[in-house]
Amino acid sequence: MDARGAGNGAGMTEPTTGPSIGPSIDDPLPLADFDHLPVGDLVHRIRSLDAPQLEILLRHEREHGDRLPVVQALRARLDQVRGGAALSDGDPSAPSALAAPPAEGGSPVQPATSGPVINPPSHGDPTNPAQPRSTG
Image (cartoon, rainbow, N blue to C red):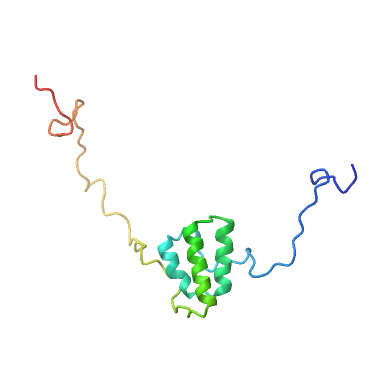
């Protein structure tokens, strides 16, 4: 065996890559929480992104999750933008309207305010109609 085949799989050559066209996948994502967005939120957040930003997201999605509804939404918006659609003025990093507001403080429930511990009888709860009892 010669030196060319050593270490790379007995004569197999490593693929060569040409110059990259378009945005690189190593670029930071335009939407920081992209992988965790529901599709409904994603459709609204991508309206303010330009074509290169949409291409970054599309490439990322294809290489990672490859979720069909997400790919379709990104492709549709990319086609719209390339066709001259106006970009939204919205902030894609704004919190979701579907997300619950952050809690202000802890839970008001404390051991002193919780109810008493109630254990049902070992044979079940006699008032529960889902547990029929024999009558005789």
